[in-house]
Image (cartoon, rainbow, N blue to C red; front, side, top):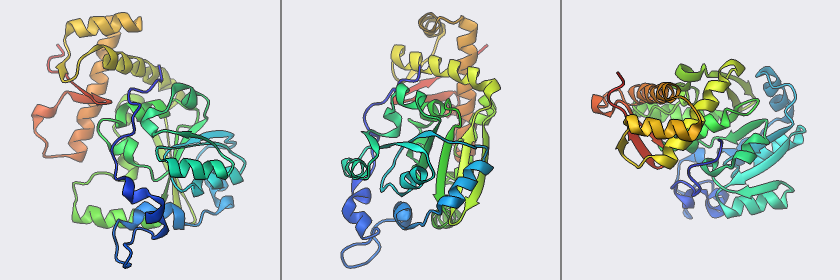
Length: 302
């Protein structure tokens, strides 16, 4: 049910996150800026342990025991969580950061967020990260990955530095269509599951928590089953028809009406997201959504 549909890491500019680039904080050898400063915020932002613990308590997480940190990168956030008594599984797609975390005494696993196994998610009380935006802003990854992470007891914990928020705010003013503000990056899930989001400040950090109410988690879990079956059974760029619905229903052990409602719900959530992020997008994109590398479309529901 919670198995990934993508095992290979998504594309990203590895050079930006290499040890050498981090050591120079994104600057070239001559000292000129080479990459945006926000990519190095974790390595230069002090994390007050006492404030972090109080922030989690304020967000309704009284006793966090076990988390998986995805996109662990330079590891300061993972260290801070461990220092306040949390058992941390450190994950990252880059070998250099996984090896460094291992030297720091962490249990590690080299993989990207979208390749997280169902067992890893199921064994965690929360999925946590410091500014790893890719799983939530990449169209091919966001829905399925976000939904899987939100099945945990406490959902997703997302740390963001004041410096990054200020830098991104400036970029968004210059390019208003960017649409990647942290509070809204999963807002489309409110439509289907009543996503709850909250944040509090902890020194130079803002800590967000995204979670799904227990009353709607069964709906989320049902949709994950349907999504996985769609990915496995239906070819890419296919307009879903009655026969596809029948095949998915059989594979899931669900009724056709349940599967149709589930597919419609996911289509509507995607439409909502696209309209918010890309207001000028043509209506011909309505009814389309992605599961991993596959795109599906719906046109006639009645």
